[in-house]
Image (cartoon, one colour):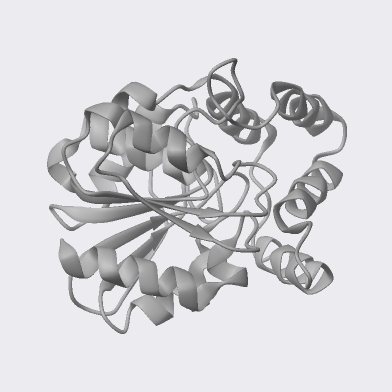
Amino acid sequence: MIKLHQQTYGQGKPLVLVHGWAMHSGIWRDFALQLAQYYEVTCIDLPGHGRSEKLDEFTLARITESLDQTIRAESSCWLGWSLGASVVLEMAKRHPARVQGLVLLAGNPCFTQTADWPGVNFGLLEGFAGQLAKDCPTTLVRFLSLQVQNLPNFKDQLKALKAAVQECPPPDHDTLQGGLDILKQTDLRPVLAGLNIPVAAILGSHDTLVPIVVGEAMQALAAHIQVSKIDRAGHLPFLSHRDEVLAIISRFMDAL
């Protein structure tokens, strides 16, 4: 069993926050403290990220196994952002007793675009994979820029993101590549369609990685999914539109 770094704040219904690709739990800190006024909020570093030990294979099966062994609460609501949304969907598939509800924040059950599904262009992710081996720091900065572009306060958002990421050394190449492979290859649409627990999706209208029309596509798979769209938000609505996201999550949590 590997050791995963986690921090828990507050009391109440348990909520686990799972970050995105190349990030760590520090990205949640201010947001988590706001949620912790009402809930027990656990922020965890994925394997090989932040202060967590790495896996020899960064796959959804191994990731969710390590989360199952680490998280204390028997059943929680799991909130996953970006890659984290894929992780929490897999968690619901493999460890359903541990999952009371899901919040998919700027997430997509099939991250890459197909003929019948909206997503990010496969070539863009392939480009990231190719650049990782050549210049990891520059690739990460480029990825961060994509997540906040089109926002009025682009420079401030990017500066805050860089500062958060630089709290910890970046994941190693194998872990980063494993995360990209998950985004490129994983199709969790059947999992989403088969869930019988409450699910909320929060999307930004200006997200360059998860198209806003994914909301309708997800509801076509499972009509019970609650989709919220935040106007002018990008891929990080919990930073750029914190109050709106907090309100959506609070309504969802209080109904569980």
